[in-house]
Image 1 (cartoon, rainbow, N blue to C red):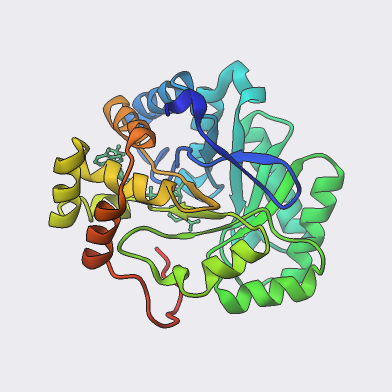
Image 2: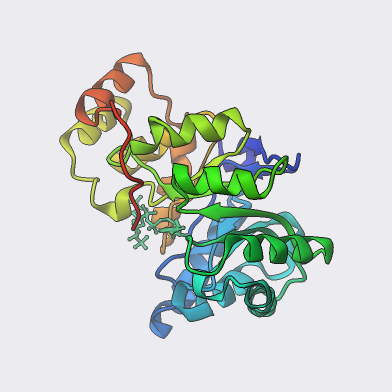
Length: 282
Ligand code: NAP
C-alpha cells in the first residue's frame, strides 16, 4: 500500500473519508517555520495524502492559512477537517467562527466541521448551527471531538437518527482507554473514531517494545505506532509532521504489516483497558 492507495472509511452520511491524513496543531505559531510547514503539508499532498486536520485554535487561525497555502488549486482533491472552539459554539458564534475559518482556508466549504470539545454553550445551539451551515453548503458533515461516553449519549438524545461524522479523540498505544467502551459504541453506530496525537507527540517513540517490533520489521517506532492504529477498523489517523522526512516516514507506515506476534508483543507492553476509564485529553 502507498499514499496513492490510502484506504477510506464511510462517514454516517455516506460520504467517504481517507483513514490517514496530516494534523496541523502547533503550525502557524512561529513565522520563521511557516514556509517549512506549508512545504511539509504540500509534500504530503504531492505524495497522495488527501486529508488535513486543522482548527481555528491552531496558531490562532494561522494554521488554517497554512493549509490554504499548501492546498492551493487542489481544493477539490482534499478533505479538510476544521473545528470550532467551545467558547464560540453558540448558534450565532458557530456560524461566525465557520465563516472566519472559510475565509482563512480560502474555500467555500469545510468537509467535516467539529466541536473541538464540549464547553458551556448548550449543545443544542451548536447542533442547530451545524444544521444551518450544512443547509447552506458551508460544511458537508459535522462531528465532535473529545466527547466521552456521557457526551456521546447526550448527543444521541439531542440528534436522534443522526450520527456525528466522527468523534476525534486522543488514541494511541499508550492511551487505549476508549477501546473499553467509546470505540465499540462508535463502531456500533458507524461513527469513525479519529485518532489524534497518534504518536503521543513523540513521547512514546523511545519505548523498547516499539523499537523491538520495529527492528523485526525494518520500521521505525513511529511507523509501528501508526501501523497499529491504521489496522483498527473504523479508525482515522492524523499524525502531524512539520518536515518532509517526517511526512515520508509517517506515510510509509501504510506499508507496515503487523502480524499476530507483533500485536501480542504490543499488547503486553501496552495492555488494553480492563475497565472504563475517564477519557484522556491533551
Ligand atoms: P502527534 O501527531 O502524535 O505528534 C506530532 C509530533 O511528532 C511533532 O512534534 C512531530 O515533529 C513529531 N513527529 C511526526 N512524525 C514523526 C516521526 N516520524 N518521527 C519522529 N517524530 C515525528 O501529535 P499531535 O500533533 O498532537 O496530533 C496530531 C494532530 O491531531 C494534531 O496536529 C491536530 O491536528 C490533531 N489534534 C487534535 C486534538 C483535539 O483536541 N481534537 C488534540 C491534539 C491534536 P515535527 O513537527 O518536527 O515533524
